[in-house]
Amino acid sequence: MTDFYSASQLEQVAALTGMARNALAKYPGEFGTPELVKYRENAIFGVSDRDGNRFALRIHRPDYHSDAALESELWWMDALAEEGLPVPRVMANADGKFITPATAKGVPESRCVDLLSWLGGLPLSHLEESGELSLQARIGHYTSLGRLMARLHNHSASWPRPDGFSRHDWFGDALVGPDPIWGRFWELDALSDEQREIMLWARTEGARMLASYPRHEGNSGLIHADLIADNLMVEGDKLRPIDFDDAGFGWHMFDIATSLYFVSREPDYPALRDALLAGYREKRELPRSEEEALPLFLMLRSTTYLGWVSTRSETETARELSPILIEQACATCDSYRLQCV
Figure (cartoon, rainbow, N blue to C red):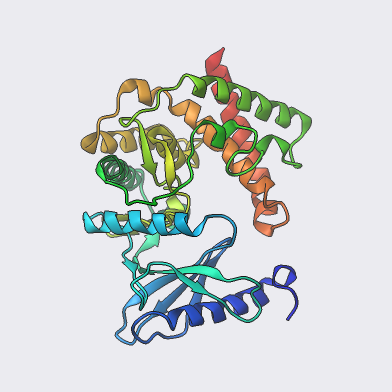
């Protein structure tokens, strides 16, 4: 086989499927053949045991999170599940560990693997893109999303984190510092000169605003940081979050902005925004002063997506998404700049 990173996606998936099989051998029970569900950075496989129970197996990409950070993500998910929040359950391997190191022929490094209970239903994004949801139905889902997010924030505020807990943060430097967590968005090659000027302004203005923005237990803590429609499973009237890979410490309004960003230019945005905020306030206080910062955090969130594609410019996903993300980011920054005039 050719080098893994220069191999075709088909060859990579074949090697990772072998790794999934090797990892499953370290869990109690008997499992069928793992089947690829999603492969962007992490590889997600669906697999069932002999009793028909279904699971999601994740093979984590190397060099993004430390082993301690990966384990910390699972600690939080396990604690949320214990409190009755509708998150996937974390399955321990035969050694009682949440993280399973695995190797396979054709993959040059050992990778961390975890096994989660399967959540049924369809992603909210699928239902939105199909056009089958009425505005009233979407308002219901975004109200539920607000309640869910508030419950996550309430839990993170009261949960005594275990010794050794380690996750990245989404505070000032991670967003607008010299090396933001997702990449130097203002250096994206696909930006025109005019677009680059907009991003440089956004970085300067964002840094200025965040320098004096309050940060305390009431408005920040552990956040999911990726509660977009792709990561919300809908089954009947139930809404369940998946993919805590980007979870870390940040402002609650950044979490809210993330959930609203990709609908923020839709005609129905005001109704969906108000629904999410109303649902949130059913479970947690949200001062008006925090709500007023939503446009700022929408702008900051917009820049992170350009950082994401700038560090993955060689991938087909980045090439496809860059024009769309650039257009929306520039429009979001321009909208915020108009409010500042």
